[in-house]
Image (cartoon, rainbow, N blue to C red; front, side):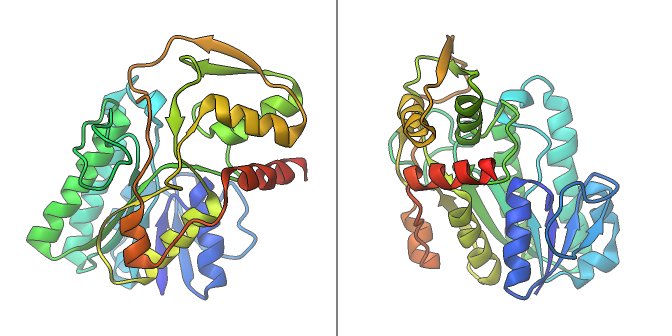
Length: 302
């Protein structure tokens, strides 16, 4: 297949591109930077200008077997500071792409959504795909809006859309910028003797999934004709305090902690029901959090 990957230079995108090339697919990466800013270990086609440029590239859209949309310019923690920019860049850019795909006749798209931000405060656990969408951050609102547009284009224009709602991914190569990536950030802070900032009392529970398990589902979904919405997580909840305990045991270092008031956009607990993805794609995550932390630590030490 010829895959066009929007956001192929990001954490998930880099791992996905490498796996796709290993499977024999040809890949064109679409990014905002003028050139690829991070290596892929293999030669791939790269187009600059981001999603807006892709929407204008009728030749590339016409040749693509599937569009894989992994890009976002914000995180849940940063999106509320400038919701207009979030809407203009991520939502409007995606709708322009869908319009371009409709006109060119290419209707196959895989969209990476959020397995936490779109649900908001859970009504029940684990959260399945039928759970109401009640986002409390612009990030979640925009992700859920894109999902609704995809369904609209399915109903009115025959699109074949697959939506993957991703939990908290981690693993080698994830940026440690303090806004996301708790596993990688805690490992680095423990190794360097720095202090971890915890919003709340550390009891917040999240569903952490190792990057190779994420990529296994994304690649299987890309190669499949199955459409619909699917959660992607480990199906296991871990509190921040429990995660820190795992990190301390793996690194052999105590992690200093600074507690700050909880943030309103952080649900107390998010654990995903992944039975739908298990059934439809015969996919099962195989890496425990303890093993994933060890693998991530090893990669940071290399």
